[in-house]
Image 1 (cartoon, rainbow, N blue to C red):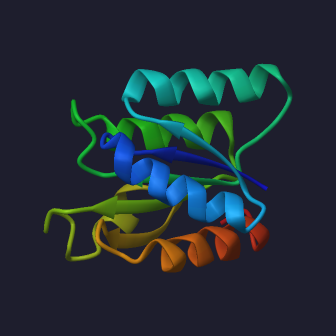
Image 2: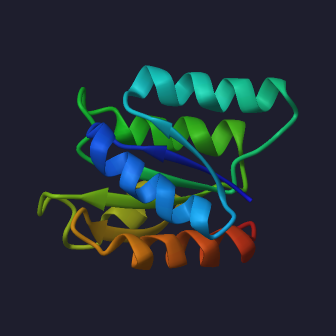
Length: 128
């Protein structure tokens, strides 16, 4: 299983990445919108796919929703787990805006819990 972590804070992204690697999940880290788009394009060119994307909703530049939409085009079965340290979308409306959204978690979620959710959504993919 392959996962793309898109987190502006590299230190936090590395913590999540290490937990996923311990579970045997191949995890790539992108710290910007441009890095994430490159990773998605590279995977497509290599005829590979990401099953899950962990996406910081407050990604610098405000492009998280556009990135989620782009991911659904490049990797239609990709599941997105949004993480945030904001109360924006705390009403659950993120699920109305992003068809590939599967979870909405606070940034402070324990890494082992986040890794378990990635494993769950990565192995239980379906077209919705």
